[in-house]
Length: 261
Ligand code: DGL
Image (cartoon, rainbow, N blue to C red; front, side):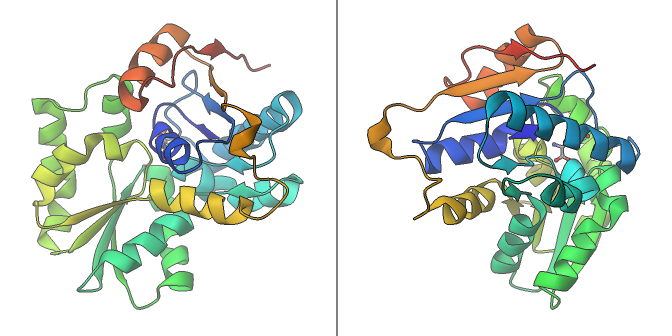
């Protein structure tokens, strides 16, 4: 599993809880975050590079792109480039959103790269064409999470400003289309209105992985012993361990550095 930084830990939590027997290798590309403002071609290159590392050095049997920006930039390319199944977070998120909205008027927020790519608009057209989707980019949110600042006056002021169009549009459900955003859920909820249901793709992605593994030779049996969790970071590993442990929980007990050529 990989993300630009700490955001994918929301998906890691859901996966560990749902599939506790599975080993997990997590790459947080904190040395190159944020992905959101970068050109999609560059993010696609990073995604291919990390996927290659996971397969060659860690022999993973399945890759989860726990980053909406990377999934928007290159999920289809990754799926054709490698021999193992590759799961993204965009389609699972749209399926959850469609289940939750009552009025059919729903919002999605994400990075500039994700929203600008049109990936959510395409996924809704394919999976839930009855939905009226209102999209907004939220530049700056990811940086607050990476600093560990999930509740502050500054992040609240930014949320009020960025979410005003969605509040005015009276959406009844809001998809958090960036894996960092669940860490800002309280701030986002305060800004958009507590009556709006927030939807994260983490659980639905974990269910999709379970469906892929269940009943196949790929699934790991709980009888095979405790699962191992490996945490890799391309940035400050001390910070990755410290903030990562606060955000994910005790499974994140150490972090290993990785470098890019
Ligand atoms: N968690 C990533 C996502 O889901 C954040 C991307 C970034 O680094 O800007 O899009």
